[in-house]
Amino acid sequence: MPRARIHVIPTSAPDDVSGLQQLIATGALDPTCLRAILGKTEGNGCVNDFTRAFAVSALKMCLGPAAENVTMVMSGGTEGGLSPHLVTFEVLEEEGTGPALALGATITRDLLPHEIGTFAQITCVAEAVRSAIQTAGIATTSDVHFVQIKCPLLTSARIATSPKATQTRDTLKSMGLSRGASALGIALALGEVDAATAERALAEEDKSVWSRRASTSAGVELMGHEVLVLGMSPAWSGPLLVDHAVMMDAIDTASVRAAMARMDVGRSSVLRALFAKAEASSGGLIRGARHTMLNDSDISSTRHARAMVGGALGGLVGRADLYVSGGAEHQGPDGGGPVALIAERTGFYGDTE
Image (cartoon, rainbow, N blue to C red; front, side):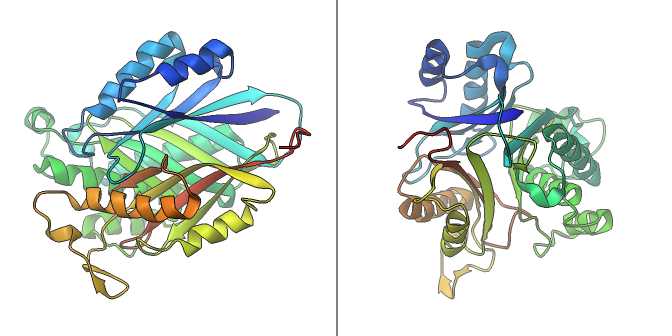
């Protein structure tokens, strides 16, 4: 049976692959079994954040031919106390019983610049997510707990060379359009919305239409989509579990605590990794209190939101190596966002630790 294995690797810089190299050298990680790598880099998370591409380049050089079919999602921005790190996902084969964490990964075709932020992007993502679910052997969409996508953005060069008019000439706005279309593609694939609703929500920027399990991050380093699906399946073995929560606002740690309770974290399992979306509420309020994240002309609101949510979740789980991604268009309610948690059952292999 397939078994998922993960490693959380601290990094000292975007191109630091020493931790990955050490795991490979000791046999703790098999690069031929890698399916995906997610990471947080210390750039600004905006259009000109080249730490993401820098990290991907370093990873590809480290892995060589083994990197060819590995989904790589680098999220820029480690504001506040968030710690730069990588999370690797391998698929091994061993005897065992389920259910356990299942994963599927795929890479889509490249979009044309004028397709970014359109229904064509929604359908492209939806097809890829359905394919990844099938590859993972996840029986139903209700067993999917998280879908992470790296999506493209527009640059001035891409706009200038586009054969057709792009949805925007604002490169920063293109990030939100791409994230939103990708999130709606996930929602469509998971049956959370129908095609007509997804198309309308994108056109009208309707924040009331959102996915409970989508996480999308835009970057300059690609024109397609890197897709990772995480879920539970009886066809997979191993000690890893995955569950999800939806933060209703930036300080809603109760929903995450409830997911940890469902996984019995602290008793029969330990938290291994956490992934979250963050965005400043458009109304300028958090539970009736005014926030100023949208009024800061020096620092993007996405950077403020990452720092705030990272601090709230870090205080809850007692660690700083959390994957908190800014920009939550159609990903959770306005001002909130989906969260995924991976836990490992203790004593699964008969150990007493």
